[in-house]
Each structure stands twice: as structure tokens, then as C-alpha cells.
Length: 616
Image (cartoon, rainbow, N blue to C red):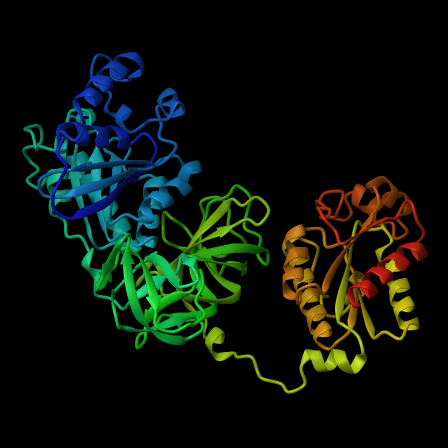
């Protein structure tokens, strides 16, 4: 087994299911003598036991390591393999072809320089072939090898190869894929994998390994770009040392260089560069280092140390490509965690500008994105993030979205640019601050957010709370769910997306009123935890008080003074909470009101005392 020499090429294999990806990589590893003797012996034994090629070696077993993969004969997870030749070192990611595992393909592609896209010579171009091509382009892969596989099953017919090449050329022209080559191969027999063989005399191009050994690698591009060092964590082993650790995503850093800390914009100079126990004069893109600064400036995880005269941008609104990777559809207006580099912030995704038809590249109108959909969206974050367009930087242009409840990654995104309004709209300084407003009223602002099922008694209790506070000389305002739908939110319906937007708007109004020094009482079903958490995040620390007005569904239906439950049961009202739309009760409410065990007056007294207790 060769340790390999030269530079490093990262590549993936991708394409539709059962196109022979694992077999091709297994053959590549085997014929290039990139496995140990004991691995070869184990492969032969496994092939005899669970292989699918009769008495022959099943090369797919070299990379299909999961028991489920071997049982089903498919790739499920991403399998990484390192190997090398005298000319170059390689890391190959064998990615799944099944549509339900597209997220795994995106994971493998996110760090690759090249994609080997397999197309079965018998089947030609398929939807997943086109999807994987488009995804490879979106995540920044510039070189694609179209490996037309299973040529042995079409008797090495040139016409079959030419048909695939013609179809791919048409697709590539539409998709804007310029750098691609086609190679006819047989993974099973080894033709044109490591050696050319004699089965296809009509083909005069390079075999797969030869091409992989010679294709240019853009590894020097990042080194020639301005310095970008995302801070992963602050190193503070003692009081005398404060360093900033991270991997340099681009550029070169030298001792004495002037740098700018983003997004704050503060400047300093590099004092020391440490790589393990070694102290360096300089470090380059790809190295993970600890740097110290000459000045005591504020710098934390998620910040970026950048070239002082050529910094990256910072903004809170973007346009981006989005690949949706979850079974549940994207919910426009819902808050997700956005992780870009070392920074994690709350983000809201707006309804797609359009989705992309992976077969025709057509732009389609879409209200949301489903599993494996690709679209262009606008996002808003609750804080500025340092970024660069994905076309310029994978490290600062690529992000993932994370569901706040499940912590599952639901989407991968690639930033196009900051929206102009993100850079043109600024906070205007005002001399009369929220503290002045509160002091004038002699109270601390607060938001009492009453949530619960329809019929729980929220509006009744909220009205009593305001009356009791008013009697004590407090300055208040009541926002009721039904009332705001007559004006502020009269354009919204009751779909999940509209409910989310309803709560977002009310939350913004409540925040403005708290800035004015008021005690705000709200009464909204607000059925989703994520949106209640979103509103809490809008408020100053300690100002939001979640009040759960708790009654069982059966009791709420009995009260049903508006007759809404009866209409929902009869199918006359759609998306009704508790019937055909879920209610997510608070897990740890600040105040829990058991509305079956006390009167509305008693509940109001408890809420008032809790509010006033926070103001002492």
C-alpha cells in the first residue's frame, strides 16, 4: 500500500442508486494497491460470504461498511477512504444514491474538490443524477467526471456512451456546469478505472485514476485570498495568556500583521502564532493555530480575525440557495438556528423566491420547500454575522439550519449576497431611551404572555390582570388575539405559516411597547414553542413571563362559547388548534395556571403578584 505523494485531492462519488459507486471505488482502491494484504484477504472472504458477484470479488464491500448496507446492497452513510499514489494523495467520499439520503451526499460534497458522477450506461440520465450534479455545483465543486458505468453490460457499445454524453452536455449547458469530462468504465471488470484495458479501443482519453492524478487542484486559491480566521474558542489557560484558536480559512497571517476583529470592527496586531508547542512566524490557509493579539480587544467564539484593509462583510439579511433535507417541510417565518463557521444565531427563513426543477432548471413558484427541494430564499438573522458569498468562500458562505426543538440539521445553504436593505437600514440613535421611558412611569417594563387552548380563559384573565395593575397605578397595554386580527393582522389566516407570522408581529409590537416602559399583557393561543421562544428572545433579559393557562381539551370544548370547536369538528374550520393543528404546551412556564382549579380572579391575582415580584 502506497502512502502517496504530492498534493491532496478530495473527491466524492455520487449519482443515482445502484449506479455502481461503491464497486467503482472498491475497484479503484484494489487495483491501485491502496489496501493492505489483510484487507484484501478479508475482502475475498466477505465476498464469498455476503458478496453479490458469485465467485468474483465484490469490491463494493470495501466501502459499504454498515451491516444494513451489506444486507440491502446499497450505500446509506458517507464512507471516507484515504489512499495515495506516487503522484497524489486522495480522500474519497462514497455518498449514497438513494433520494432519502441526499443530505448525506451534501455532507460529503461540502469539502470535495471534484465529483465523480456515475451514470449507468443502461439507464442514462436520471432525476437523481441531475440533482446530484446541481448539488455539486451549488456546494462549490468545479470539476465533474461523468463516469459512464457498467459498460460491460452494454457490450462496451460506444453508442450507449455517446448517448449519455449528449444528454449530459445538454443538461450541463442549462445548469452552467462548464468543467466536466466523461469516461466510460466498468467497475466490475476494471476497464478504464486504473488501467485502460482493451475492451474499448474507440476511447482514447485518460482512465479514471490518470485523470484524478492530473486534474488541477485549486488548493492555492485560499492561500492567495485575504486573511480570514474564524475564532473557534478562546484559549485561557492562565491569567497571563489569552489566545484565539481556529482554522485559517483563507490567506496568510504573520506576526506583526494588523488585523480587524469582525463584526465589531476593532483593530489590533498579531503578537504570537502557536501551532501546538511550536511558535511560528507565519501560518497559512488550512492550518489550525492559536494567535494572540497585541491589545486587549473583545474577541470571542464566532468572531472572525481578518485582514485590516480587506475585511469580510457583516450583515443580518441575505439571499441564499437552500437545500431542504428534512421530512417536515420548511415553515416560512419560523425561527431556526443558523450555523455559519463558528457562529450560531437565530434565523428566520422567508417564503421561497422560487424552487428549482432539477430536471429542467426551471424556476418554480413555491410557498415552502420539502425534502430534497432546492430553492432560493431570503433569511433574516437576529444578529450580524460575518460572511462572504459562497462562490468566494465555503467557510464563510456556507451554513446549515438546525431545528430548535429536535436539534436536527434540516437544510444546507449557500449565501449569494447581503440584501441591500441589510446595509442601508441602520439603527437611529434616540436620546430618550427605554430606561428613561420606564423611569418616567416609575416601573420596570415587562411582557406577560398568556398562552393556552382556545376557551382556556386567557382573554378573561388578561383583562382582569390589566384592571388590577391599573388599580395599582401601573402603566399597561393589553394585546388580545382576536383584537389584533381586526387590524394589524387582518391579512393573516390560520395556516401554520400565518400563525407564526401572527406571533412574530405581535412580538415586535410587544417589544416596542416594552421599550416605551409599559407592562404588556398578551392573550394568544400561540401554539408553537419555537415562536414563543422567538418572542422571549426579542425581549430584554428577564422581561418576558410565559403564563400557561392550562385546561384539558375536553374542558375547553365544553366551554366553547364561540362555537369554534363544534365548527372545527364539523370540518367547517381548518387548522384549528387542538383538533387538526397541534398545541405544544410550555415545558417550563414562568407561571402555570390550572384554570380548572381556580377562578379567573384568583388566576389574575397570581399573575399580578408574579409580575410585581419581578419589579422589586
